[in-house]
Amino acid sequence: MPVPVPRQRAIPAVESGQAQAAPAVGGPSKEEAVRSEEAGRDEATPADDNDATRNATPAEDAHQGASTTGMSTTGVSTTGTTGATGATGANSATGANGVSCGDAVAAGVGSAHTTLTLLLIEDDPTAAPIVRDVRDSDDRPIRVRTARNLTEAERLLTDDVHCILLDLALPAPGRASAAAGDDDELAVLRHVLRLAPRHAVLALTASGDAERGAEAVRVGAQDYLFKDELDGRLLSRAIRYAVERKRSDTAERRLAEGKLRAQENARLERGLLPTPLLEGSPLRFAARYRPGRSRALLGGDFYDTVRTPDGTVHAMIGDVCGHGPDEAALGVELRIAWRALTLAGLCGDQLLNTLQQVLEHERDDDEIFATLCTVDIAPDGRRAGLCLAGHPAPLIARPDRPARLLPHDNNGPALGLLPGARWPRTQVELGAEWSLMMYTDGLIEGRIGEGRERLGQDGMVEMIRRQLSEGLSGEALLRAAVNEVRELNGGELTDDVAVVLLDRVP
Image 1 (tube, one colour):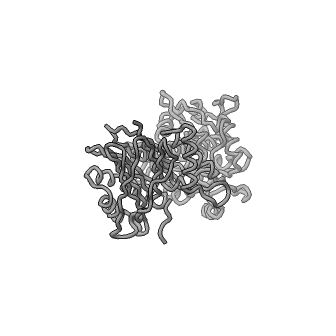
Image 2 (cartoon, one colour):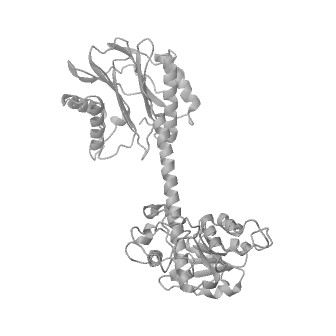
């Protein structure tokens, strides 16, 4: 790199024991938890401060255990049996290992040593005693905050709330009553889901109104319960199940979004890599590219090869200082500009001077520069013109003599350093049969072992000579060269590496 100038639901894996429990949804700092508890002290059940430990692991790390959940074709929530237990399934659903799913969830939540916090949104005070008696799998009381309306709920909804228990009979904001003939019976649920998209939600509905509860699950609630069949044990399992399901759904969604972004980026970067235009040329082309950025497909190095109508083959390789996404974008712009200028008939000093103007207009910083090497090979393939702009000289190998570097005495400055600079074109003889290798400095700046010594151009020439003597050529030669440089470096190279090989065989 150039140096810069100064609902038949699938059982989640966490329930079946196939994966570790995902981290808690929310999970504030200790100070936030204390402030939240003080704000709702008159409504929440007291708990020992030692039980307030939070699991701070990011939710993305739980994707191994994420699985898709769904609805049954009957339109009724199928997270458990219908009837007296509502839709929790705590007493009937069983995993593959014979353990109750409710117990598996309880074990998952309890293993995190997280004190759960429940926000009850209910205007009927008779429901509060049952809710306040609910406990987690370690027999610790679940913290409960009570809101009589959505305004209070919004005030009490802090990051340490894990689950919301919502009465579907509450009126939605701006509506007089949910029983007064509203078109949307689940308006209050939709409002809460918009208010708390990262929290698990349990819907509370009237006994026998399973259809409304199932619709609530379809809208976005994790489960539903019947008011008059509520008890502490059932509610405890429902809360823990809802929290785990929300964790699983969140992790799965983030994993899917991450994969989609990675696929889109990969398609974009692959589309930015060049396709050589060599139709009608007897020359053989091979290239090897390895960006220095972790998990990237494109770096600041760039290359291209085209054949013009007169039979001349033009090849180029360059390197923008730095190896981030901005440098990669600038490298693509320079490559596209080079191809357009070459096909328009420009060559040598005139082409490089125009490329410098492109660089000066497109770079974000005046200290950004780029090195470049261009070669134009005559139609007969026996001679070529060479221009160097602060770039390492290409290597040529012929059957009658050892591999060596092409002359580099007329190496001009890198693009973007000196306004009005000139780049002389050197005529070189290639011969009847040859291999021409162009490369970026990432190939020669890797270290040798644990010391400070670098491979350098001399070391690279010796390496290529040896590999050619072993009969390697084309793609195999480039692959072996890059792999050996990595091994000598003791691991991945920190700089981008690009290598282009052109062969002429009579």
